[in-house]
Length: 440
Image (cartoon, rainbow, N blue to C red; front, side, top):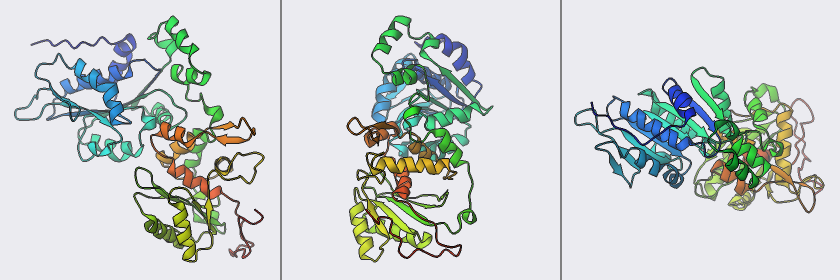
């Protein structure tokens, strides 16, 4: 038997703990500090699995949030560590390597480098093993709707790897895995792993903020929790609450509508009644007329007291058309406009998110949607240098963390743009003089 030596020398923790554990567990979450060697370790885990797999035409994938990112991080590693395997083929355009087949006339084992921004590359096929890197920035439906079902036929594995970036979906996946006997979990800090020597570690820390040190080196999921408006634990608790229509009977309903342009963003409609938030209606690539039709349908179904629409993007056109059609309970909301509590909040955007937090603390129940929960739990606040009022950190930073726009969260908080009042009596008599903008 010919012996093939791959140029990989695993670090002690990989050799003694992680690789042996992955031989036993089908699912895993590995949390580790920056420069720990997560990518190298996982590329070699995929290579080993591809070599050992005896099924016909095995397929494996390393998935990062973006294709260019995945290529930059992992492609050269994959080519280097498989270079010693005779008969290996490299496909530069589609970013996969193919190993010789164990079956006559069959395609050999393939390892793909894929970006989560191109989900079609993962749809409609099977996978024998997948590694998801920086899961906090990957759309959560990719796991539940695409990857997990694709692993079922051949009992494929899935390993989640990353460094903490706050209390988000990666944190939630880590917590869930810790509670399951079927998952392997580990967490390695920079001061414990021995990967970075003491001098280099001290040098790095001089150039990092306290939050960055706790997060990037000490793997602290709560590093920025003091600045998070809605902690993930509160979001998770709210998602586990169950309310039905009779629990909120007689309470007024409000719609929040976040209108998106064409592209990756979504138009989202949320209906909230009392302490119950209904499942969102999510649409992609709609023009103004189509959005108006969807809002009218929601108004017909929910009969809201008021409809709050984000005036940004195409929102102004949607509002104008709804008013032309006689819907006089539709109000525009500009996220940068003045807050009702203007002494406390810099703008209405900050005020809405904090009102949403108060609502969750009072017992609000939300749909258990991973993407929605992630969006809610990454929004951070700070105090304005000029006014000392509360303001939220820029939406651009949120999009960088999530890899997408927080459309679900924005639609939800729009339902708190102005206060609503319960009907006068139990027969749901509407207050005819009600105007949420009265006195402004």
